[in-house]
Length: 122
Image (cartoon, rainbow, N blue to C red; front, side, top):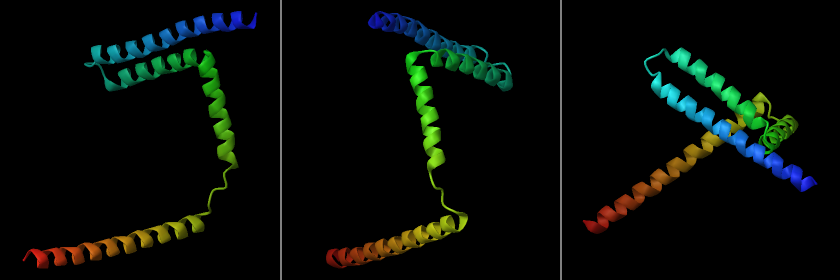
C-alpha cells in the first residue's frame, strides 16, 4: 500500500517538476522576447515566475526535503560561536603579516634563483 502511494506521489512529482522547468523556460524566453521592455518590468516578471516555480518545486518530495535541509542548516548556523570583533581583527592581522612574510621569502628565493641561473647561463 505504501509503495503505491509513493509511486503516485512520484508521478505527480514528475508533473510538478515539468511545470517548474516550463516556468523557467517561459521566464527565459519571455525575457528574450520582451527585451525592448523596461528592465524593471522584466525583473519583476522574472521574480514572480521564480516565486511560483519555487512554490511548485517545494510541493514535491525533493522540494520538501530541501526545505527541511535549509531549516536544519539555519539551526546549525545559530549554534556557531562567531568571533568577537577584536578576535577577528587580531586574526586578520596575523594572516596578513604571515602572507607578507611568505611573499617576501618567495620573492627572495626567486631573486636568488634568477641570479644563479643568470650567472650560470652567462
